Image 1: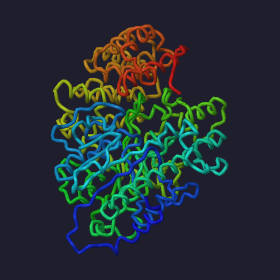
Image 2: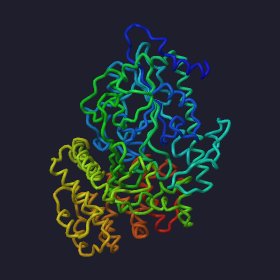
Image 3: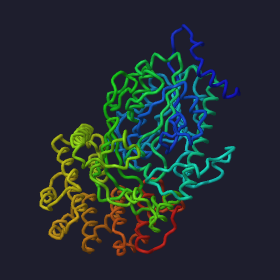
Length: 626
């Protein structure tokens, strides 16, 4: 193998090797990795040690405003591979099995039909089946396995920077490095406490990035060995923000912004003529990656794709983001960014980001956060994670890149808030954002009609969908209960659900509505009846509500069981009457070998996590993954 210096000489001198013959279709290589924001050295981070990536960037296009559309892997990856917003397909929840339209063809399928060999090594995590959609998807998948003469589209995803290795602090993960980052030199963001343990984890995160840099070097060397450096367009990017509190799972810039280097050999420079210079600040998000890849390959972009070719002359004006259920923590939040101002709307502001759930006490930085919180040693910026959230947030990322100053209520920014809120509303309605239907309702309706979530959402009239959005936007802003009463009897299931969420977020006495809420315990929609039961138990430990939640936990539909389990977890110590049925009847159904406790990585795992936390809330010790 030739040394890396020669490899980079090849990268920088491709112009001298052009051939006058007709240019063939380019090979396309995606090199992705987990859980890191734009902290490569080429982005100005002096703490980072990324020589391979930095040298590649010197001969490539470095994008400075690139965003995952979701701050967690499955919805981010669904968006990447489909060129569609996850909320359009219903694939925004982690982790799920969503029925998708039969006519949906994901990126590798479209490329395969155009003559490309497609390989994926190895992660999918799309929230729908990937079977039959790649030529090869396995730990052995490689462009080298293709038939002779075929162009390839190959994806390699590296797990080394995932939150698991970051927080585990395993020495063997970085044993290949000659030196390690000095924790004393780490520069922590204001929302993380400056403790020795947190510095150690932060430094280890940078060590893992350096390991990834070596993995990039290996892949580029393989291209060199195969004589393909001049024939291959290379993408290098992460899937969302750091695997640390305040980043992954957080719908803010720290959770969404990612690094992205696009290397285009000289013979294909005509494909990127819309980009001037070695650095681009145009707005790009993951929904654009699939259509752009197709454009680079000279393949028509399917009409169903919602993204756009980010290399074209027409630039995007906005980037949209979404945060929904992650593990057993239910959320609905949306964002829109215009290149300077980031607007965020929380549809469940009564819930803290840092919920009382196992996923937020799994070791590493999360355990350190909890320890310092219990000791009363958290900085104010970190305390916000445990508090209820503002309904609306506006950050000026030019003046406030660390997102510390919410401008949403500042009269000077009233017009900007109105502009971005309006754009967000229009986007949610136009794309029939299934987050408004909630997971339980959208899946129930899809099952009942033997259809898929995408088609279910588009069966709503614009007027009906706008009504759902209107009621969802009331949450956190209700001043009189009379405002929400009419919506408790709506014929639209999602309207009734959001009316209950509005009551749950209401800070006054809801006593006058308990009779009406009790009537909703018999609602034929489990997402509605479980929410009604949760509200009643929190208010008055209603015995009928306990019975309803117990019955919902016994359903065969795992999606609905998960919704009920989440409600049980939120009851805190008031879940105690349900513990016998949980331990004797529910948990045995969902037990298995995952983490030594759960049946699989999808709904059973999250049902188990929610109910394990419910036991802990009631003073019962259970074995949990750390």
